[in-house]
Amino acid sequence: MSPYGDEAVDLCKFDGALVINMGTLTSESIPNYLKALKAYNVRGNPVVYDPVGAAATSIRRGAVTQLMAGGYFDLIKGNEGEIRQVFGSSGVTQRGVDSGPSNLDSHGKARLARDLARREHNIVLLTGATDYLSDGERVVAVSNGHELLGQVTGTGCAVGTVSGAFLTTHPKDKFLAVLAGILMYEIAAENAASKDNVQGPGSFVPAFLDALYAIRQAALKGDHSWFAGRAKVEEIQL
Image (cartoon, rainbow, N blue to C red; front, side, top):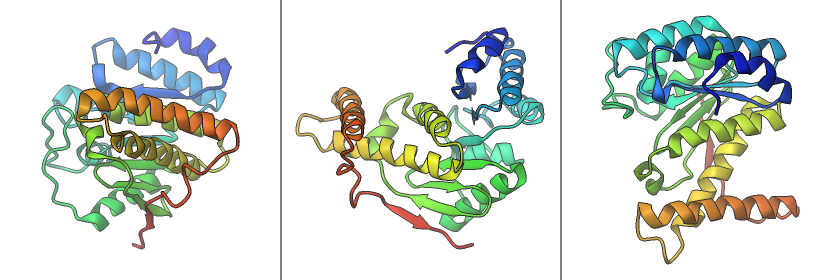
């Protein structure tokens, strides 16, 4: 949670992941992001980039350019508008952090994720009602989750943090690590939304936290029944 780039030299020694989330961008943010990015790249720790609202303003578009030139990101995660901006597509519009209208079908979104991942030699996660994940070769569509996630501010940003944690624990296959994190997160959302006491976003949040906790406790005991038959993953051939 540190916004102070000089701390990164010490923080990276804990061998966790760095998540650069552009949600609260300020004039001081970019130099701090770049310092942290360099420190974690030197250490070889995973770095996640969440270019929140990348196409919303000229300042954010400029920040994307600086950050993409400043180091390596193991994972770039964003909605369609954000991923298109990072890729360099023209005419991208966003209303704040919302993606804006889409003119891409499922294969178009899959191709966008694949092409960016191929160019950057990393993992790209394009989020939405259906998520598209690619390592530049493989592309899968993930259809888990629940619409209530989209009604709670911060749930999209939390995906970046979860992905960073999974990348740290399984660095040998980054694609599989991020996929596992997405499935855990979105199946937990499904479990929470199915509770009788969940009537909307307000009651969903505590139920979601409990569902994440329940999965963690089950996994610690070697119980993976929460996952059996639940993954909605489709390989996309392009």
